[in-house]
Image 1 (cartoon, helix red, strand yellow):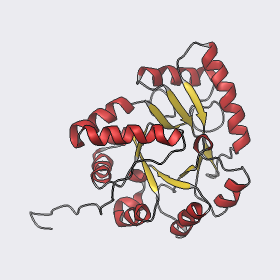
Image 2 (cartoon, rainbow, N blue to C red):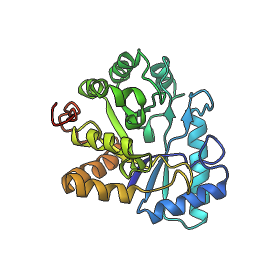
Image 3 (cartoon, rainbow, N blue to C red):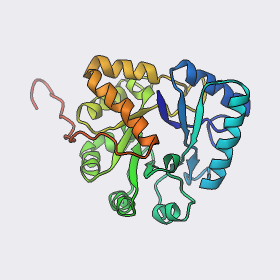
Length: 254
């Protein structure tokens, strides 16, 4: 399996603190059935600034440590930028980093709201030749209350990635339920671990795919897995027509 979202690079954000932590995460990833990880350290989120060239250097160093430890895992360079107005310019000037130098770009919203300019910026990113991927929308309070906003973004060409731990219920029943609604409505295109360590924010991608397979069938599981591979190669991913999230019945009525 390929994991497109991880904080495995040591000492540069709130993920792995040391090389030893990174190696422990690498071993846990392999145990979870993963052979390739895109390292996506935080960027421009108010705490961390990790620019493209620095991330590439850190990725190369970690691959050396992993090879020396005989761990069958490959790390690719990526970035998790918090949405900001200069993203397009920074992509063009090689400050912001697409995933594995493809056209795919992570976009993170603040956890409690969606900035008003988000729709315009997602459009501008596409006009510039990139493909925005909204990360963990199932954990955004604003989108949970107003899922029609996410539907609008996806209808207009944005992609999304949900967290494996959300699928598995590790963030609670409410987020698990909303995650399933997004999968059912074709409002997400990738599942990834977003691992930060081996304990509180670890690896459960294999379990997540198992739950998706049981709930939605093998075709959905294969599509999500194949999309991760297509992404790393810079190829077009599989996109099913999105639908609005279904309203829940209350006392038997809509």
